[in-house]
Image (cartoon, rainbow over all chains, first blue to last red):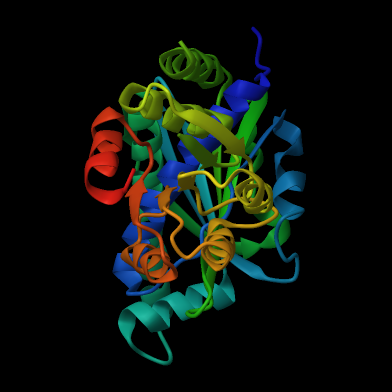
Amino acid sequence: MNLEFNEDQIDALREFMNVSIGAATASLASLLGAFGTMHIPKIEICNSHELAGKIESTIDLNSMYYVTKQLFTGKFGGECIFLVSEASATNLGRHLYITQNPSADEINDAVIELTNILTSTIVSRLTQELGTQVQFFVPYLHFTDAHSIVYEGDISEYSKIIIISTILDFQDQQINGNIYILTKDEAIESLQVLIDEKLEEIYG
Amino acid sequence: MKVLVVDDSKIARMSVIKSLKEIVPDAEALQATNGLEALEIFQKERPRVVFLDLTMPVMDGYEALKRIMEIDKAAQVIVVSADIQSEAKLRVLVAGAKNMYPKPINHEIMKLIFEKDLLV
């Protein structure tokens, strides 16, 4: 099984992700009544045991995090992980519930709501670009330190993982987060086929 | 007619150029991968139209648009972006873009751009 991507495939995947993130940012901007700054998505392929280190290298290790994980299945199946720091989550709760001191339930609810919009918009748009469909599972939320984000069970079914990551960035509201989309080996192969079909359409 | 297509993604540039060639077969497509490269090419080549992405490394599209308009107030810039927030559109229109369209651009949208937005 060839799980390596060539330069054109990576470029295409990054661009499809960019369009998907754009749709998600607009949905969240509407929810928050705010403007979100878009960032260029990063695509990395790594071995599953490297995942925790890759995530830790992009976040503040001194913060506590709300971590939401949502599985999706289909030709392009995998898992979406959304990290939001305790401070950002509190700001999100304040903003959505219009209160200075949101309760723990309100913060949890706000993070879940954000994740639902984010994951469904990003993955749906990405799969729309790729001409396929997926089904979503209910998101699972936990609150943890930076070193306990990835469980062993999360990666046991993966050998190689594509990490598609970007930053959610609403500066004025001080709400930001990191998004990672993980895909399994079978999905990587399907993804290569779908991307090649799109490249053929453009390049002929 | 010289047309400058600015995007850090090759597939995005090719997608714009493909639609462009369908509407204006003799268009000469120049390419830049970020705002800074776009400025250099704009200064030198003075393209009739610029298709400009917003989220790019080195120099983003907002800054490039501002600088292009400083060079030539009559520059015809069409922003093509994944950023579909209404505020983003407002910002680029205020900065002088002729219009802004969500990615990806297809044949129908390109036709509309040349019929409604551009003076060519």
